[in-house]
Length: 217
Image (cartoon, rainbow, N blue to C red; front, side):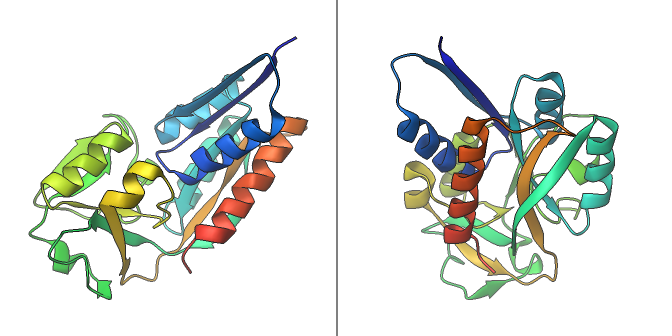
């Protein structure tokens, strides 16, 4: 019988690394695995419906109340694995890429890139810290590759965890500390009262290792 396991997460790279390490260690001649990039609501829906065994989410001090209420309503719970500080992600050749610290005011003239959560999504479901701050120039993206390419091509920026561990993003983007007291809370989502499978437990361990290794404090 084929092994099955599915993860749905926001558009971060640390869960990709954890997922790869998990399935490579398991090996096997037959399996059916899935890793899906979703909106925040998509992650909640997938886990609630059983389409994903585990969801990977980031919330902030400002958004966690509303997100946790949505999780509660869906019969889900959030387990925090790491706290991190938001960072500005921008192209390695961006004029501000060598700054030691940046404010959103410093970036006012540059295009802001963010992941589109859908027309009806609450502001708290944004994958970017301080996503509700008005910007004069903004571009919505639906996938990580497009956002990274646009950041480089247009000297744009986004607000991220600063965890750039992938092959593609790691080479073209860099991060700079964002001057803000806001904290990120990174973790996973499961159904309340449901025991995590052995594969799921392995994934959580690898996810925690990845976050401890790469998270910025």
